Image: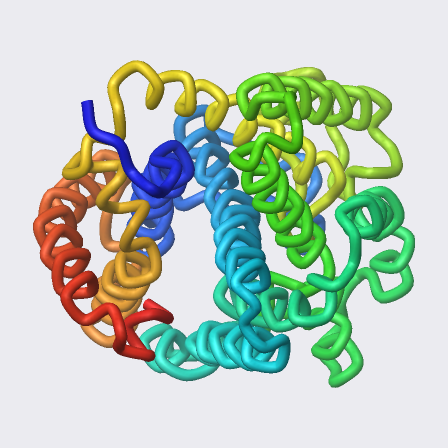
Length: 372
């Protein structure tokens, strides 16, 4: 059994959703039957939700919340350690702002180039939310939790003021903050404020992990995650059962399992947020328990993917979008082919990510590699 300075379960969780992400992105690029009706702006009432197509898309909903939440967790651990060492406050803020800006700019530049249209998605949300943490890091954990829960609980009211989205400049601004926007030349699916709320919660969790390590709290991470996870899933069930406020205008049409899980990702509803963060918390609690039994397994697939998440994301996304957009491969396949291509891509990505992790470790002082 080996020990790591990092919490392997956090990297495992990130690596697990990267695998799900590949399946979803392959489907988005190549699958002619890809289901993307997870927003009130896209879903047409009464549309069918085929079992396997729907589940393949739905399971990937876990990816972005985990990515954003754990980005907040990792950032908090890094920043709070710098604070404890007495690093200059402005230097910390500058590092946060530069890293956030770098990540956010990847969407309107390199991702958009390969996608063939202006694409403002998860990297924008992560990057700008990270930049906001230069301010929010100064708040207490209690205040941060209240801010995040206030948005999750009340954000639908603000979103309703600009819903449904329209093709005008006002809707672009609204989409960058709370809504969505889509034309043939631009798509905005990840508004800042709901994803910032998830990053804030991840930041508070990062603070908790440091506090637990220092012996300042007796509540263990497994107990905490299971408690929060079950509570979040109960909140999801309550909102979905009542089928009203909290569903971000995407309501159940019947009692089938598909419609229970057919929650709005674009923009994130309270039901979506509670469901995904609840599932994440339960899985991560299980992973922490497993880590205590078997250690971190330094070359394990989940750990390697989780520790190279940004490079993993860029490489597979650019390959898929580039071939789909510029090589005429958009929507040429079915779901079976989607799974086959996903397996092949994951097999090829593993040795690349293993090499990149080693290369990055040997060049630890490189500013650009720190961002990737």
